[in-house]
Structure formats: structure tokens, C-alpha cells
Image (tube, rainbow, N blue to C red):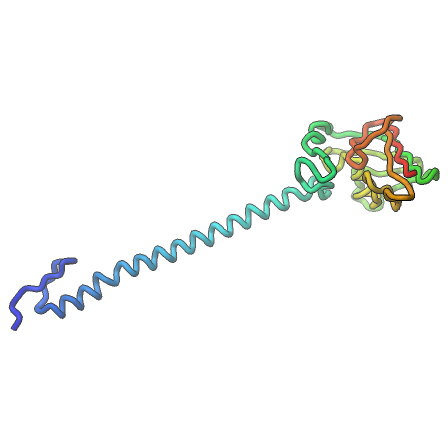
Length: 210
């Protein structure tokens, strides 16, 4: 008969034989660390999942924040400089801080033929566009309560209101090529800003394709 004392080093419990003590040690002391590791593993998975959800929310905010300002999507890719050299930050520094009511006049000449911008463009619904026409006189009525980088560009009227092409490459259906080149003049002087130009009250804007 085994008369030696068998004491568990983990909890000081005394057992009658070595076999009983070993069973106790395996059940009470060896399994416990494994359970702890398993608990830590579950906690780590929850932290990772929460981090992924947070990244999705933050990413979604920045995507949508760059889309619409004052009801219209941006005319550029949202960077400081677009592929055509447009400097959004420099433009933003020039726009008025308060509401405006300006009336630039636009002349369109395609291969020597003068085109008329239709009346009431941008007034087709109860929600009038910030830029619109009233008469067939090619005067744009820039009535903007909150000027932004988007709605203060000349291209805003063509692209978002009239739904026509206008850039350094095209005017309406006429694009640079063997048939001619798009040119723009503001108050008699050549201007290379094209759709990114910020019109002022009383401007005489002449867009020519020849």
C-alpha cells in the first residue's frame, strides 16, 4: 500500500495515490490555460470584426462626402488637381462667400454659325436650377444662394443643367479634330479655363469651334 503523501502542487490538495493526483491535475490545472486562450481568441475576433466595421463606415463617409454639394455631384474627381490641371483649392478661394445673382452672356459659334441657348433651361420643374435661362438671349442667370466649387463653374450650366458637352475638347457635338478646335474668349481675351471658368456678372463669354 502506497503510504506516501501525494499533494497537488497547484492547489495543495492531498490525494491517496499518484494516479488520483495526476487525474486531478489534468482536469483542474492543465485544462484551465486552454480555456483562457480560447477566451482570448474569441475576444480578438470580436475586436477585429469591430475594426472592420469601423473602417467600412469611415470609408463610406468619405466616399459620399465627396459626391454631392448643394444638390449636384462634383465636376472633378475630388482631388486638388484633376487630370486637366484644374486646381479645386485655388478655385474655391475665388468663389463668393454669399448669395449671388449674376448675368454673364454666352455666344456660341460653331463653324461660323451662331447658336441660341433655349429659354427656360433649368426651369423645367418647381425646383429651379441655380443657373438657368429665361429668354432666348443667351444670358445665363446665375442665382446661387450657396456658391460652391461645383455650381460656380461654367461647365455646371452645360453639363448639369443644359446636359450638353463643354470642355477644352468639345462644345456640344463638335470636338477637336480635323474639323476644328474649341476656343474660348472672355471679355475679348483668350481664356483656357473653359468649363472650369468662374463666370462674373456682365461677362461676355465667347465659345468658338472653327
